[in-house]
Length: 348
Image (tube, rainbow, N blue to C red; front, side, top):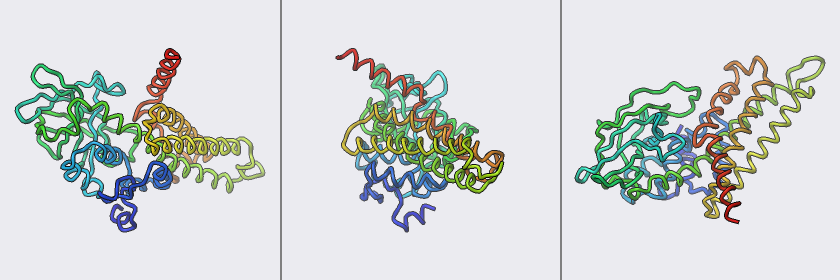
């Protein structure tokens, strides 16, 4: 699939031409990623699926020239896959990265990393891992830091691939044990102690590109349901002529349209150079919940057919439910939005 995309000049549309991509801005990505998401294979084929897409974006922003050549270039050209290891099981870092428990202890020219990560998407078969850990130099804590580690690696053990309701991510979701992982000080990604800031550089655009891809998938589900409702007859007319069905399809059109507008607004802001954290949180909550409503209605319109594997709707319904959880669950984004409102009120 990647070879076909490469031959068509469509591989890694979000990466700069210097590393083999198209260098599209966020508004342009919104169109391309939505089109890719219409197919369950599209984001993988165009090499703009998570977590690789977000990792490429971050590496291009903060990596040294050596790291760009060693890690970004082969990743952008789909020669390897990657993963991003930040999330930890309880009581470690989940939605609150300040709870990070994984430690990186300075040992001469190396850092020795120990910890446990889980729900690490794409770890199975990845060529390298970006590891988030609390860095220490003796008794001095430096702070959350990102490290580059090639895979396979004797200090990184995949304990298991976790069964989950979504299955669209290459490499699945893994529980990973970091056991005496030695990383040279030159393989710190960016600067020491800046891991949380870098995570925000990665996550704000990444949550928007999730919106783009799932908009394409939800649009496909809607098209399937609409076509079915136009052919299936019951009680003297096609289903689409029954208000109970027609109104659900109308609500789909509303949710799809408003989701597209929310995505375009944040993309426009990012292209202007804004951080758009507030607006991206708003879009993440609205789009993830609106698109799930679309998938749910589509399944209902299809009736028994919607519960089967005969259409893509059942799969889209399952896959899209997880979108309300990863890259910040709706509750955390609502809390962040409310906190910004409170600060604004208190300031003025």
